[in-house]
Length: 377
Image (cartoon, rainbow, N blue to C red; front, side, top):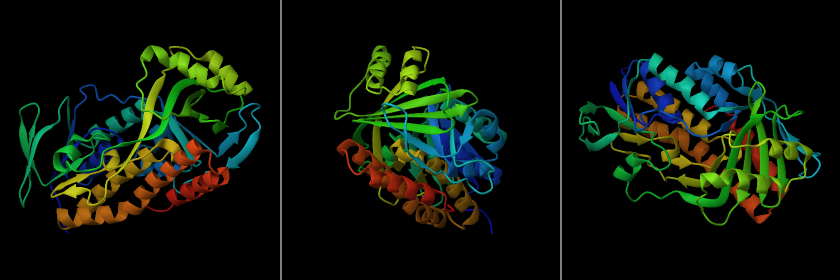
């Protein structure tokens, strides 16, 4: 049986797009990838990863590179905000086949660099500083003109261009728009505090602080803030506002962290948004994956995981099916329950935090979701 496609275009060079491109090219499909950012940069501090992401890394062949650069730890520890007392420890079961514990983290730019190297090594043709201008389809293929004036024809196109996807806006103008959830997250990089060996969280009123190791001796901190309005924060305000938030936590650990923050701490602020596109996720021979169809808040640490899984699954289906239509239908069938679970459960966790809801429900959702993500894709 031949693959459903001989030549595929991937729009977007983020984690989802690179994962798809790597597996398509390794399967023998001629694969082009275009990325609008000429520097192919990945913005952000650290990223927390559910253990299932390590399983994806193993399939992509980048697990050893992750081990050399990132961190894998065991369990989630929740502490009191004033004295570091442990409230609960939630296990993070290891993923079979990885040889690693079930919690992981890495700096975003480091993961992006690992994937970029793997993308080029797989034989993907990468064009930076470029996106599509027009997409025109017929029964046999897709004609694409690019912003650099070139054009090409493909059997299928994969739109992996993120939350504010140009591909989605072009082909599905009536699609729902991203929705602000009423929380924002602040992030910073730091030396790992003494006694922090895995992800730790401190719960306050309208605030949650977490510290997660990302490499030997280094961690990143996130501060999730209930924020009714979707505000813009000037870069000059990042440090004083983050310090003001941490002032509400007398914890000895967080007090020491606060005193060590500076303009060199790679401070970042981002409002949290969600979006779940009803199926179908494709229009003709163009399939959307990743944040373009199921953007989630980071409460489960699974957004990157399910996006990269999309890349693996769409590549597998295109290599397995007889037609593009069959591949796309099979992909959507496999992905809906898992991806919608992450979006909905993450949103519910956010809602519980904002409304001061039942902490037991919060812990139960976390535990159930972690177990569900460990199931086969």
